[in-house]
Each structure stands twice: as C-alpha cells, then as structure tokens.
Length: 110
Length: 123
Image (cartoon, rainbow over all chains, first blue to last red; front, side):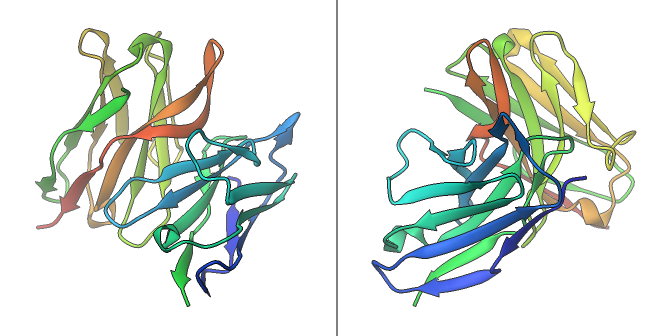
C-alpha cells in the first residue's frame, strides 16, 4: 500500500497569515499527472474536495487554497487564513489501489 | 444537483452484518461509480472498495476482502455496502462517495459524498 504521511499533525496560524501543510507518499504518484488530492473536513461533515491533480482547484474553492509538488512530495498552502478554514486537512493518492489518505493535519487559529 | 443520501445509523452486535445504502440523484448513475470510505473516530479515512455502476464490476481493499460486498440497483440509482462478521474495530462512520467525472470516465478523488452512516458495534 502507498503510505501517505502529513506534517505537521497540527498547526496554529494567525488570521490572515499563511498555513502550509506537507504530504509525502511512500511511492511516486506521478504518471503524466500527479494523482494527489486534498480535502478539508469539518466536524460532523464528510471531507470536501479542494484540490486534485496536485494543483487543480475544485470549482468554488477560494483561490487562497493552492496545491503544489510532484512525485512524492506535495504541499497545500492557505495563503491568508480565514476563520472558516479551521478544519482537518487530508491528502489522498488515487494512483494505486487501495486508495489511501494521510493521517490529517488540524489547522487552528492562533 | 448531485446528491448522495445514505441510510440511518445502525447498532450491531459483534458477529452481525450491516447493510448501508446510498441513494444518488442529479447525475446519470450508470455512467459513474460509487466508492465506500469509512472513518473511525479521530482516524483518517479508509478506502474500502468501489463498484462500477454501469457493469457492476467491483474492487475491494484487501483488508476487507471476504467481509465486504458492494452492490447496486440501477433502477433505484442506489448503491449498497454489506459488511459482515462485525467487530468492535468496525465502529466508524461509513461514507459513500462519487469519483470525479472526466470525459466519459472518472478519476478516483471524490467530489460528492454522502452524509455518512454511523455504525456502532457493541455487545
């Protein structure tokens, strides 16, 4: 199985400041495209798709969310943290079966 | 609009089986697939398997092989997930999810999810 490891496990950022979350896969998820997605999950809700193909923003997602990286190392950046961004964020690879998720990164307001 | 609506919470004893339904609407069911993902309290989501709604082909995570069965009813645009031989570690919220469409196919990240079904396994 492809193991997805995120860092940090949690971070506290001031409103308006940048938040950066890292995701590392145990094997490359690149095959012409990077098969890597990012989700946001709030309590009691299913995950919400933010980014796919590592850097393509899902329709309706604010442009303060961006994704980057290739191969095995990826980053989700929230350029200017808003109160509504408090959540747990997960990366997911869809390159190989079983599809696997990172352990999550909790983002809070400092 | 696209919707996936799941059946209600279940409480089961160890050794029992559970069947969760996922009724879809707002898109052509047979041109897509349904994946099942579960999430234990405080844990990461865990992929269980999927069904091609068009031809009924399935693929399961090796972890659940032999215990899980995913089916669909095309006339009702509904997918089902059966999990048997339940144990306490199966206590989780179970989600159905739609893989994101692209052209005539899809790719397996999930743009729409059901609301989740809490399955509690306890004696």
